[in-house]
Length: 130
Image (cartoon, rainbow, N blue to C red; front, top):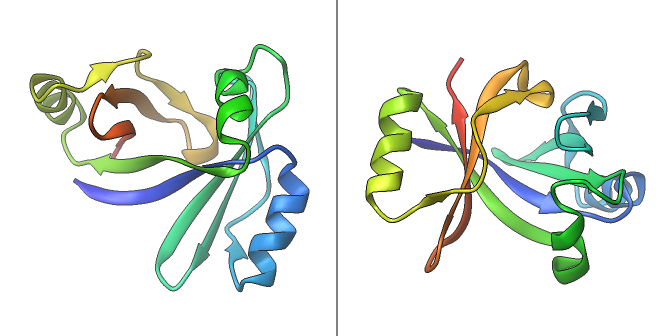
């Protein structure tokens, strides 16, 4: 598995975008409105690093509870899986607990993603390879 991005939870997407662009990050497209998770998403890249700005747009967004705790902060690592089902099973066998079911991610071309939690390592997103 290779790291695809670092998920960064933000309250105000456009303000966060401007702050990261001032640091030299370049947007990889436009904001995506993810109706499944009720978040707006933008990928930015700098020096080979990709971050994903995630901003909830509804009170019942999957990250609404997290935004109260984390404010504007990184909150997950995303790994791209060559063999999605196999690597998901291996993660679960290593103590990662699935916190949702695999669903398409509009911001990443509809590839499936699933989120997992580990008590010692925190949140991880597994992304189906192209």
